Image 1 (tube, helix red, strand yellow):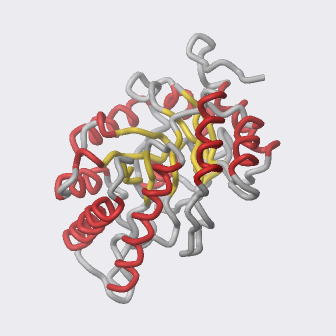
Image 2 (cartoon, rainbow, N blue to C red):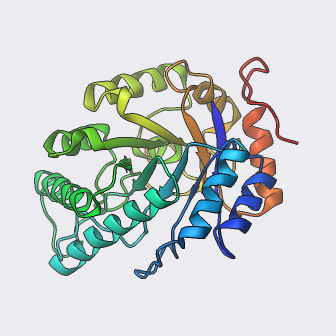
Length: 291
C-alpha cells in the first residue's frame, strides 16, 4: 500500500517534488500543463531527468499523470473528438518522459443536445483510446477512470469500462482507475463491507481486477447514488471514516497505490486528510511515516 496526493505542478518539477515530500507521498499524480487548457509544453529533458532521479532517490512511486480535463473521448463533435485524441496522445508521451506508470483519463460524454446511445458512446471511446495509443507510440498504460454518472457521462457502470477494453485493439495497454467518490455517487456502496464486496465482484466480471492499477480515494460530499461528482475530505463526507476503514483494508485493494484528490490542496488540508486516512489502517499494514 502506497498513499499520496494529486500534486500541483506550478513552478516546475523541482517544486512539485518538494510539495510531494512535504505531503509524505509514497505515490503521486500530476497534470502535465494546465488541466483546462489545450496547450501543453513538452517537459524539458533535463528537468524530466532531475524529476525521475528525485523520485528514485526518495522512493516515490508509482507515478501517474492525469489527462487534461478538456479531453472528451465520447464527444459527438468531430473536431473536439479529434483534438481530444491529439491531447491524450501528448499526455501519454509526456508521461513517458516523466517516468509515469500510467495516464488516467475521464471518458467524457456526448452533447446534451445531440444524444447518442450507450452502444455508440462506448464504441466512440474505444476508437478514441486506440487512436491516442497508436499516435503516442509509448508504453505508458492508459487508465480508464469511472464516473459518477453526472448528466450523460460515460463510465458510471463498471461494465462500461470492460466494454471499452473489450472493444480496443490494445487491451494490454489499458487499465482501470476506480474513484471511491465516483463509485459511491454512481450507486456502489463502497462504505459497507457487503457493498464493496459486491462492487469488486462486478468489477472483476466486467474487466478483471488485474486491470485495476490505481485507486482515487476521496470522500463524497453527495449521498449514495446521487450521480453528482463532489469530492470531499476523508471521513467528512457520506462515505465516512468507517467506510474508509472498509476500503483501505479490503484484501483485494490494499496492495494498490492510493491517491487523494481532496479539495483545498493546501499543505495543511492535505496532511489532515493523510492523517485521517492513515488512522483507518492497522499499524501493521501502515506505510512508514516519512519524517
